[in-house]
Image (cartoon, rainbow, N blue to C red; front, side):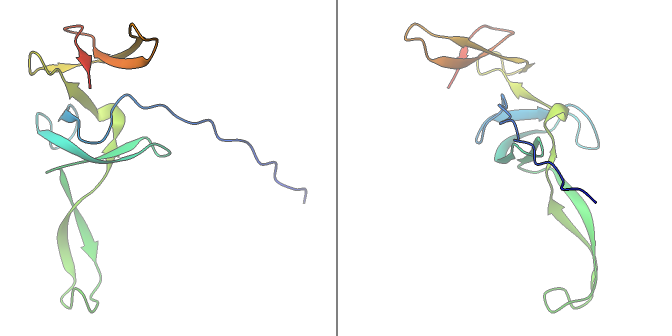
Length: 115
């Protein structure tokens, strides 16, 4: 049994950030618009406000009866699209350099820079 080689993880740059307004494009909540609460870049998942899944829990002190509860759960980033600030429709996101040379995000549909 040899040693397991540790690889350096590449930092993943996501185009969706916390507090962005996104639309769910796939799954049970298709068409739902919500604000991004938290981003998990390592898993490429985001937590969207109002997108809840059911979770089965065993009886415990917190849930004495156990059963099925509704919990906001992370969804994969590929299942959402950013809402264009100008038109209010879903758009893809690009990155380009502005006049100062800083990398900024922009909406591909309207070309408007996203703050």
